[in-house]
Amino acid sequence: MIISRTPVRVSFCGGGTDVDWFASSEPNGGMVTSLALDRHIHVTVNRRFDDSVRVSYSSMEMVDDFENLEHELVREAMRMTGVTSGVEITTIADIPSRGTGLGSSSAVTVGLLNALHRFAGHDASPEQLADEACRIEIDILGQPIGRQDQYAAAFGGVNSISFGPDGVEVNPVKISPNVVERLSEEFTLVFTGTSRSASEVLSETPEDPADKLTRLRIIRGQADAVRGMLESGDLAGLGSLIGEAWDSKRGISSGISNDELDAMHNHIMAMGASGAKLLGAGGGGFFLVHGGEGLREKLSELGPEHRLIPLGVDREGSVIINER
Image 1 (cartoon, rainbow, N blue to C red):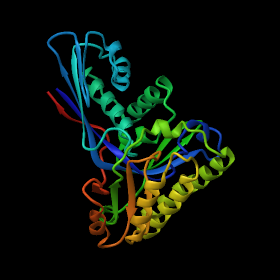
Image 2: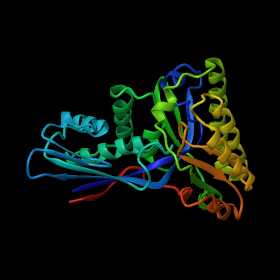
Image 3: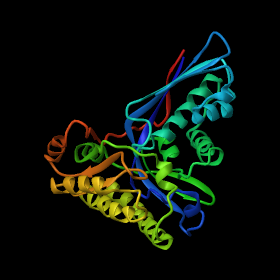
Image 4: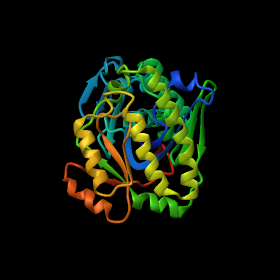
C-alpha cells in the first residue's frame, strides 16, 4: 500500500494573478505569496486481486475500465501515470475537499499523482507533480483556475510563486521560527459554513473587465509586499494588508461575496480583527483573520458551524508516508 500526504494552502495575497491570461500578458507576470497549511489530503493506492478499479471518496465507484470513472481527477491521474487497472484508490481529507478556498482539489490531484507514480515504481519531483497537476486540471479538464494551488501543495513551506510566459518559479520566503510561531498564534482560519466551486466563481464574467485588470495589478503588487512583511515579522502590517486585498478582490465579481459573507466579515472586524479576507475564489469557504490576543476566543463565539483552524505551516509538501 502506498499513502501520500499533501497539504492544502493559504494564499496571503496575489490570488487571481496566477491565471494564464494575466500571467502571460503582464510585464511582471503574476505572483502569489502563500503558505502550505498543516492540514492534508491523504491518498492511498493498494493493489487489487483482480484488474478492476475501485475508488472511494465522498462516493464509491467500482469499474472494470478506468475510462468509466466519474472522478475526473482520478481518471486523468491514472492515465498520466500509466496505472490504469488492478488498484483501489482512497482519498481522505482533513477538511472538506471542495469549495473551501484552500486549494483542496489541486492537493487531491498532486497527492494522486505522487501515490500513483510511486505505485508504478517512479519518484516524482515537486516540479513534476505540480506541472502534471496543472496539465490535468487546466489543459485536459479545462478548469478556469490558476497554477498557485498545485505548486503550493507539491512544494510545501512558505513561498512567493511567480507565474509568467516562461513558466513558474517557486521562491521560498525566509522566515524565522519565531515568526512561524506567531503566525499560528495571530492568524486564524474561520469556516463560513458554506462552500462554492472555485471554477463556478472564476468562470463568471466581471461587470467591468478594465476594472478587474486594475484590481489584479494591485493584488499582484500586494503579493510582493507580503514577502517583506513575513521576512521582517511585520504581522500586524500583514493583517492590515489582507484586509486591503479583500477590498480589491471583492470588487472583481459579484460571485466573490454576498450579503451573508459581507455581514460575517463585518462581524469579525467588529470583534477586533486587524484584517480579514475570504480565501480562494470566493463565494464561501474560509476567512483568513488576523488579530491580537483574545481574538480567537471571541471568534469561537461565532458557533460550532464556524470551525477555527490556527495557521500552522507544512514544511514538506506532498510526500509518501507509507510504502509496503
